[in-house]
Length: 88
Image 1: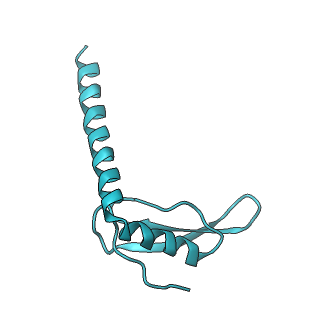
Image 2: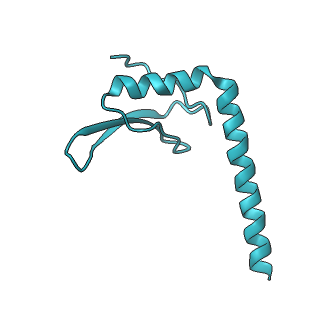
Image 3: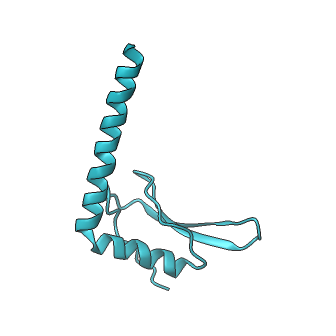
């Protein structure tokens, strides 16, 4: 199993962990999560797959930076919308 987990592609934090839970069928599901910004992978049947997906996302820095900028812009738009809505 690939035990090296790269830094978060969104915030750059090294506080990244492999975690797991049991689903309703009592099967273990694994995911990688950033403890700083709460970015996560999807759920995988093994830890190696979750780490591989996470590390691949780190390698695709252009795509992840683009996604991060979209999320940031959506947050700004929502914040402004809520401010306008509260002002009505």
